[in-house]
Image 1 (cartoon, helix red, strand yellow):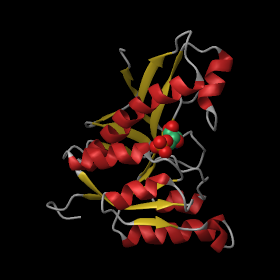
Image 2 (tube, protein in one colour):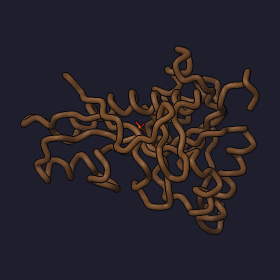
Image 3 (cartoon, protein in one colour):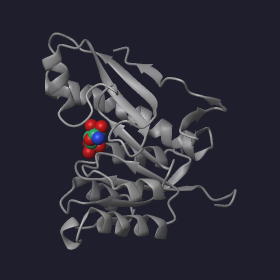
Image 4 (cartoon, protein in one colour):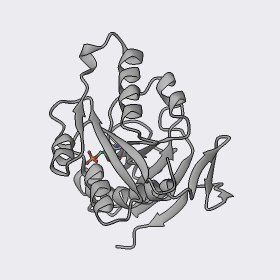
Length: 219
Ligand code: GRF
């Protein structure tokens, strides 16, 4: 990447792609400081592919069934990401577990958005599980991806208070709003060199980040 060239980003999705849309909107508004070069989905009918096409971004469906195993699939996806010159991989609702080889290939250059206050509620159905646990705080986390699922070093957390009337649907909607904010912010900061991983530690604005930066929902 030359000084005049902005960071290339590849976004991996499996579904709706509203986080992708937030990234596209931020790019158009000049707030991403980077360029989404490709959107890749393991699901043919992922709505996010349509969002990418509408924005004039290469939208690629790579069918897992065409590959012998996870490693072969991930290696094809990695080759594609490299071909598009992406220096950052953003997992935005990508529902596949990544192989170690893929994670090592993009070491320190993969971020994920997860709908919970990690380390609480790794995995799926986080909103339902928060309600079942009667937790009063919930939110979303942006973290660097390492080999342990949903366990890489966190960067930002968006926190909301869970109210008595909240349902899975309202939590999902409220958390999504925060996801857009912290994901776009993380990409912008990574693109401008303000955020990176050094020896497994998150560096933010020149200093190690001991705990995720919290953004509290005030509504
Ligand atoms: C988000 O809740 C994200 O945290 C999770 O998957 C969901 C994707 O939503 N990883 P969308 O496809 O961006 O609307």
